Length: 396
Picture 1 (cartoon, one colour):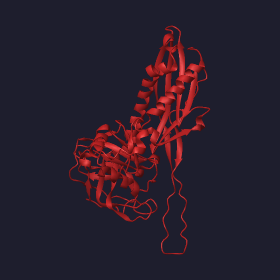
Picture 2: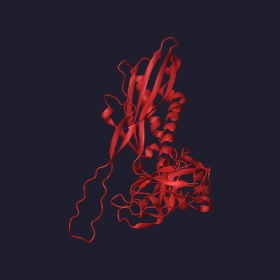
Picture 3: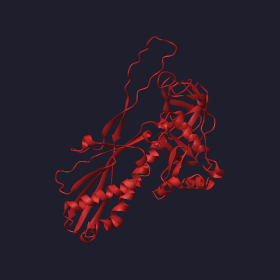
Picture 4: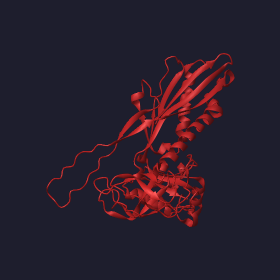
């Protein structure tokens, strides 16, 4: 039995099934499968280009055409990581039924693989998100207050995220418990009872599906949040700022006093300050790369004016403190890409299977000395934040 291709094919299919069931977060974002590698196989470092939507400005009060150039832009997703899990079976273990083999070996192995990948991706994309709601140190849902969630919904609406069935919320168990306990009637929709036993699924509210996920980001703030201000000229389109005072960390959100966010289409200023997130710390350490870039004109305008020297920078939360960063998002805010790994020329027992954009390769080899079959499951993947504006952190 150990020498037949049917066994390894069954193992691969079972691994796919288990992985599919475990994707609490990855299953709710855009999942792309690059079939250009279906024959030759991909390698670490291969890239996939994703075209971004065009943006335009409105001609106002004139019948004379003001023709705009088509400015095509795209992002590249690098298939940068190969993860796997490795196992071995003896002849007696291989004689088990596929159900027993799955329960005892495949399921725990694939669960570890998928949980690790999902945790890395969820933490990574959350650090890219600059919209943030909630009060640092206050658990969402306490005293029946879910304003952090409804405010996150408003953030998505203000940035024109589609109002469809593809909005989701990832919450840790403490936050979920607080919400359910504080608003016990919230998840009692009889139409949702049939979904109650889906793993991680709790309910739907505020135009989003709620999921329980212990892998949401815990972000530690920098060592100093006091007396922070702009310490250098900021040009239109700037993707970095120089700050005086304060020590921030990558993933920290801040606002600049009076620099208002604008409606993505009308460019009319909102009542709230635009939020920014630190994406990198450069040399000298007072220069912070940020997202989004600060743009005051044109189709991509996102603020009403440029910051000025000494404008106050507000960094919420307490220095050197860790806070849970749960997440509300539209499916198309992020993408997770897999590509086929190559089938090795000398591997007679090597199988690939693809399900819902997830490509897994299973490779078997025998160890004649120890009467064992060595088996490895591999996945080659990459991920990217495509539309950060279509997501919002929910802070505890």
